[in-house]
Image (tube, rainbow, N blue to C red; front, side, top):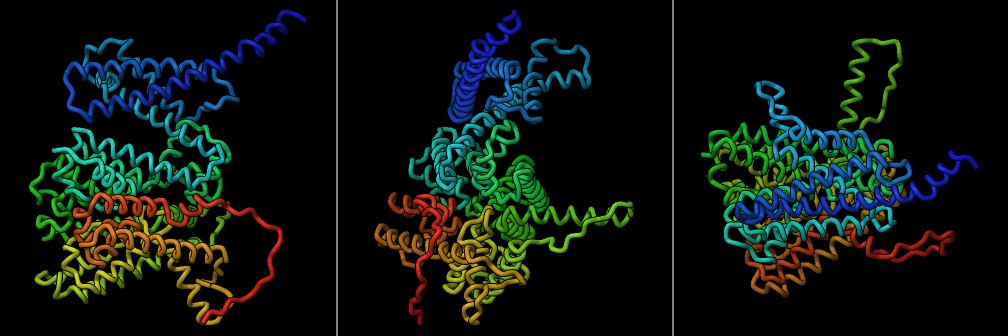
Length: 609
């Protein structure tokens, strides 16, 4: 055996195992640094700290920065293809941005002004450094969360656990001294965090008078996380920056976001985030354009108001920074466009991300076809017959019908009642707005206690139906409700097949839809029954409205939420959590699934009617 063979064996048996162990240790250190960095941010912005404490926090930031640089360098130098740490294009970009923070350390500030000095100033900024460290920390923690999927854990339980963890973190953040003006009880903090993360909108305290700017920012971040979905957000960070997901991970995440193939998984996640940011950005600009110079706010306050309400509306949360919500006198007059914009944002958020992706694909197809028709290249253009899938058609048809029926019914019953004294155009606008909100967005332009019983009963039905599947909305879901109605009509006509738009619905879709309806009704009945025991002073209508609102993550209330006892608040918290995770999904996750059988029992009939 020559020298090179002995060197190769030594490398394989002694050197590489130690290198792999070193890289593993470094990855563990980066996780600890990620936690330390986020805790330091929470401490700095959550507490009133002295200059000495702020200096200590800055020391932690610098220490984390140094450790991140060292760990990243070690992982790059000694990385192996077989290790769990994989590099993507975005990982390299993030690492390069991290290394750029060394430029102000190596080079002095340029003496002459211009672009070079501006770049040096940006790289020297604490905001730039901390922003990069925050992205690194989020990517590290997200990758560790997504790795749980590789342990073959039930995806439903992982989703529920993720929401539960974020709710607890949110409640802790809302109890920080700088988050509120005069403090908040733990049950109210937990209630608010659950309502925000589950994009509900029910509150037991007045948001603008209780929470400071920092507290409101925490609420809107929880709304954004809950609206996108915890697993969607964390999976995006893990796959976009880390690239370390197993095949099982990708299958589970793909099922959660309805991705057609593993090749389109990352692109679907990008579509979801892109659509969310684009729609919320356009909504923010339109809201700002409508309120500019009319509410007595500064430019920064107007932009913050617009961003908060755009996110809250698209995520179907229903939180507002105005005293009295959207029924505030400042916006009730001469702001019809504001209510229309919020109603459209609610509808877009409620139709579901798969439909938005279908819209994008259809628009791309038409643009490509138009380009081909104009340029007339030699290659053949592959035409598509079915641009919109069945799910898209059903949700769009049902959404339009529910909005139209709800608007007309509310106008009829509230014309001379809750809308009395309003101009004609205002009545129609507020009818449209209050028809959009019960489908899981808790805004209201008029006091719900002033509405007629007929309108409240209609709202109960709208709350139960909710929005589209895999959307920011809650409720039973439009898809489920449509399948139940279609199957009912097929049974009434005596048809052996359930057909809609020249498509036959699968037996599995029908069975799951009826199971979802029954589980929803059972849980809401249990909630109403338990609430009636805990809140004997409340009317049955107020209790039923509260429970339907909580389970459907709507956020509307007949002024019962602030008066609830701690037990009643806890019931609402459970209903909001179950409603956001999914009634049927949560039950199916808790119950052991039956293995597939290769045999069937003899069939028999039960007398019906």
